[in-house]
Length: 398
Image (cartoon, rainbow, N blue to C red):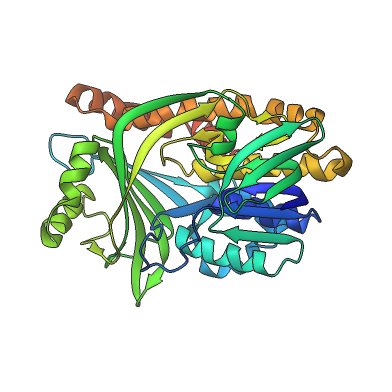
C-alpha cells in the first residue's frame, strides 16, 4: 500500500513526537512512526526515568506545537545551576558556585520534566490533531529518495511518499544510514545511572552538578513527590563502576549514593527503578540528504551535561520549522535543506566540542588535574562578565 504525506517523521522519542506536533500545528500533514509504543507510566517496564530541562529558547517551539500549556503544570523551574567541586582527597564540597538566571533574565534557565511524562503528554496532543497520524509499533525500514519525494518503507509493508522525511530515529538512525551519511563518534567508556529520589532539604529550584571523578553527578529539580521534595538523578561513571553500583543491594547502593551526593540535599532515598544509559558524543557529517533532514540524535549526541542534548534537538526543529513555514512550497527541497545544514551544522559541532571538553574535565581522576579543574571553576565564576557570557551561551542566547 502507498500513502502520501507532507512529512514522515521517523522516531517517536521526545524530539520526534515534538516535531510531529510542531509540523502538524503549522498545517502540514504528518505521519510519525516508531518501532516501540511510548511508555507513558513511570512504573511501567521500559519507562525512561531520565528528565529533560527545556531551556528558555525551547519554549517557543513547544508553544508553536501547542504543547507548552499542557506541560507547564508538571514542570519544575530551574532558577539556579549550582556547580560543586568535590574533587579533594575526601568526597566533600570544597567549591560551590551558584549561577543564577536572575543575572541574565527575568525567567528561569529552564523547566524540568520527567521523560516518561513528556511522552504521555505529547502523545495525547498528537491524538487530538486530525492532520497527524502517530503509528507506534511500526518502524521505518528503508528509504529511497528522488528530487521530488522521499519514499519510506515501513515495517507493515506500507510505502510513504513524503515531500520531506525527518530522521529523528536516534544515534543509530536507519534513515541516516540509508543516505550513507558518515558520523564521527567519541567514546568515553562511561555509562549513566538515571533514577528519582526524595530528600529532606528542598531543592529550591536549584539544579546541582557535583564533580569529583568519572563524570558529573547531577540532581535536577522535580515537583514534590508524596509531599516530599524530589529530584531526578543522573550519575555518570566509568562503565565497570556503573555495573558495580547497579548490582549493589538497595541499602549499599543508597550509602554509595549519599557519599557521592556529598549530603547536598540531605539523605537521598531512591523512589524509582534504576536505568542505565551509554554515554557517547557523535556528530553526523551532514544535517541533511536528498529530501531528508536529520535532527536530534540522528544528527548529534552529547553527554548529559548542561541540558544541551534535547535543547539542541529543539533548535534543529525550530530551524526546520522556520524554513518550512517561510516557504511551504519549498518543503524538503534541496534549497531548504541546504539552508538547514548551513544554519545548524557549525553550531552543533561547536556545542558537541564544548560538552566533550566539560565531560573529560569531569572524568579527571588524578588529584593534580582535579585541583586545576577546581581553580578554573573559581576563576570563571569570579569574572562577572565572563560568568554571564557563559550562562547566555549555555542557554543558546546571543
